[in-house]
Length: 413
Ligand code: ATP
Ligand code: MG
Image (cartoon, rainbow, N blue to C red; front, side):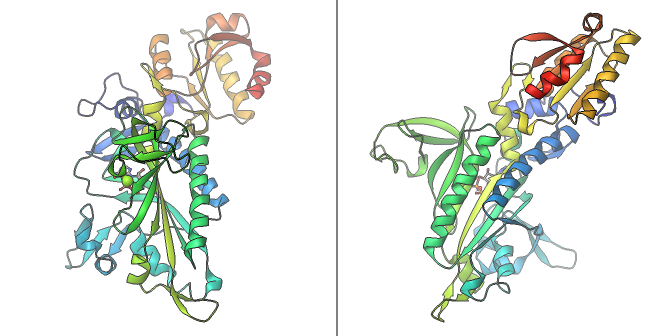
């Protein structure tokens, strides 16, 4: 992609109304644009990051047998009345149409997925299964803050599993937990599985917390084994569920995922029953599993940045290579850069090519702001040596590399 054609512009000034690092850097970099409090547009660079996160999540959900579906955002009021959440869920956005009908904007999808499963489940042979979607959610949050960390419209992966008995749910729940830890690890984050109280209709839940100083949640982490407890359920005398010791450190976390074993509430509201092996009617046992995709993008920025800008982990970076041409008006330098750009594309690399006519200082500052993992600079100095200067965004060193050695070098990376 030529940067001169890229839809989106960097800016030197940060938004004045949101001091969070992720809001500042993502808006300055032209990754996202704020539409109103808690609502963002994703520009090409930001969407590429979001989609890369989604793809990792997708792979790991598929790997544990999750099947991707897509449910609507507009829900019938009746389903929410059926579960008691039309009046019981304070963050529910409600819509009244000009015809006098009422709808909910989906903050979560138990009210759609449970009735959806009814015509599909009749016998124990239809169980178990898990379905998931990646979708935009709406919640009338009292306070939206910290950029992508808490919005009124945000991106979520939500998975729902259906089982014949609690033992089967427990087994899948642990597999989902392992898949969550792996997902976060792959995008560069060490998540702490944190015991928490349940939501509206759940016995308890496990949150996946990322330690960041700006996290909303207070968590207590076992000093021996990195198991966490959320503040709400913590007591000084609590012992760690894994090592049984009692030594905790308090920390701040941002919850990027949350998994629940649901009570039979939803299944019984919608009469979700099956016939067991003995021919007896039983209520289906459900679990639900969320990942805050857009919050994750914000957390990544909170975690990986310096005073100059974002430092994206490679797997979610919008591009792998930032090719920056500092031609100083010299045609041969521009030509050299074009050549390298074409060669890199041929080799299948994802390259953002800064071909804009701007000062070297501005271009290098933009490059740091955007946080693309590898920067290749072409300038009069490098052309003389038939070389390219390269620098990893996460590192300090710059090095000259012969142009003809470039593909060798890149394949080693
Ligand atoms: P929180 O405790 O942060 O309010 P929650 O427990 O209500 O979240 P879930 O219903 O479990 O959230 O949603 C699954 C995931 O979606 C959360 O773990 C979080 O990462 C993300 N999420 C929830 N609310 C928001 C929001 N308002 N903005 C961005 N992400 C959110
Ligand atoms: Mg929560």
